[in-house]
Image (cartoon, rainbow over all chains, first blue to last red; front, side, top):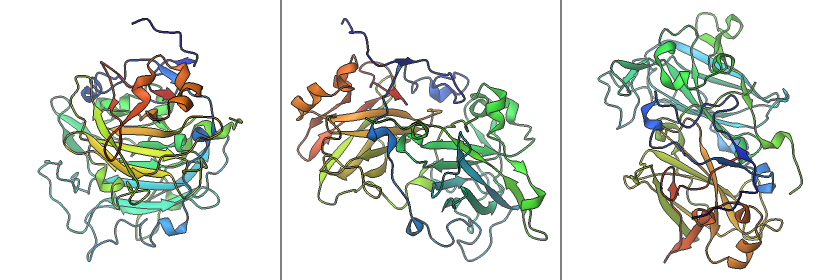
Amino acid sequence: MSRAAPMLEVVRDGEGPHPPYLYPAYRSTELRAPKRPLLLLPHTLSELTGPVYGEESVGELDHDLTRRHEGEPLGERIIVTGRVTDSAGHPVRSALIEIWQANAAGRYRHDVDRHPAPIDPNFTGAGRCLTDDEGRYRFVTVKPGAYPWRNHPNAWRPAHIHLSLFGRAFTNRLVTQMYFPGDPLFEFDPIFQSVRDPKARSRLVCGFELEETVPEWALGYRFDIVLGGPAETPMEP
Amino acid sequence: MITPSQTVGPYFSLGLLEPPTNELVPGGIRITGRVLDGVGEPVPDAIVEIWQADEDGRYRPTFGWGRSGCDEEGRYSFMTCKPGRVAGQAPHLTVLVFARGLLKPVLTRMYFSDEEDANAEDNILSAVDDPSTLVATASDEGFEFDVRLQGDGETVFFAV
């Protein structure tokens, strides 16, 4: 079949801070990575708009993963907080953040997870919150454990929390993972290493903050998130 | 520098699928389809999100977003309305697919097979070399739209 020359600009995959689709060390990318070039969409209303969330979208305790059950979960209690901004540094207000994670033993409350580590009856591992007017958010949870996976022999994921964010536009959506400083598993983890630029990779690691640490109660970690996307440079359709 | 993407992994249903948000318009049309990998196998651990205008072609802050997980056949499902035309574009949904094995989501558009005239005028649909991969076909309840991540009939994916 002869193909007409696309009139949309072709984008080379793997440029910029995001990982490429195909990263063979992460084996599951091999059959799921698109092989055709990406086409650059013009920024129409479809690319510049997105859902807006209000206070009614989140419950009062949704940000606190340690208070969902009768008892408290086991593990090291932590606070995860930070700011969501655009790449110009402006706060992204009322951004919905959804998180999910393993418990302190490295086990997800999910049918697919077969890791023989204990389930914690007092920990589900899911939460959500909205950013405030300065783009700030705050979760209370327990530090997740590392866990094995079957990507390669003796493969372990560094401890991480999954985050999903809605920015100003639907096409600003970001799903990522937050890691903890100094994890010895970083160099062996192909998902972390799929971000090739070390500076970009360092953006996935939170920082310990004594200022966010609450005396006699919980360690504080700071994780600032910068969203990219078309909403920064609006154009008429 | 912006925060890089990481895969949604296999356990996203814990954080992303409760409560269900795939019914935008109760009693509306059904939009369903499968997510398939490079050898045509279903991708059961994928999540499909849509963003669309209302029937009058208006984007509204509190309408038009939905999210569906996939079943063992890789099938997602939404109950919604067909969007109207937005600023001269043919009716379409913006579609994001996240999955284990996708280090970042794929972005595409879904158009409708019964909008031939509008589709022929659409600047984006006219600019891709395989527009058939972006057009949902009519079914008894609504429309059917498969997303092929790789290989034969690979869906056209976009960057923004």
